[in-house]
Length: 172
Image 1 (tube, rainbow, N blue to C red):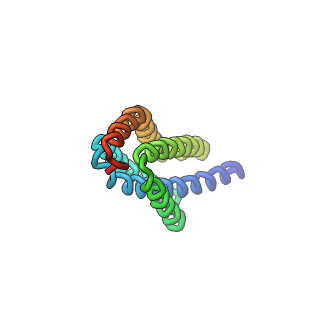
Image 2 (image 1 turned 180 degrees about the vertical axis):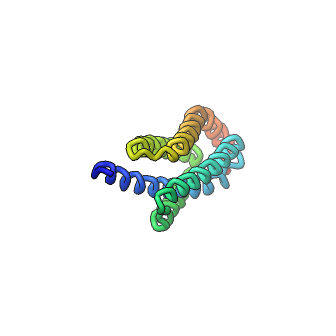
Image 3 (image 1 turned 120 degrees about the vertical axis):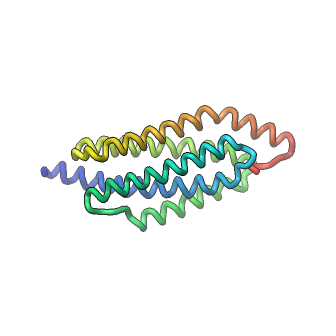
């Protein structure tokens, strides 16, 4: 293996570990949010489905890491899960919590999309054929979630305004 390929493999494995932590963060973030969306049932259902997707994405990453005889980083996972909890709590006191969470989730999905695109480039560079389909599947799931959020930003904002005009607060 050339020096470039060796370095690419190191960067790829580090990227997989990082993305595993990001998926764990996403799960924490979304789990905190869904508990406050009883007045937004379509959003709650889509977020619950994405939690399940994120759990599968984390498992796929674990399998990819195992193929390199390594595993995810418990420290990174713990730190990023903590950050996910703090991010979810940051919007909770806001009167427009559901709208702010939609903005943050949209940005987060695009971060994940960029990460999966980079991981795909690295998988191709190091010749990790087994990882390509798993990474493509995860990328498609993230793109679908980002598209769903994009399509629902307007309706979510309108629902929030209607509820606020009736004296309701946040997502509850």
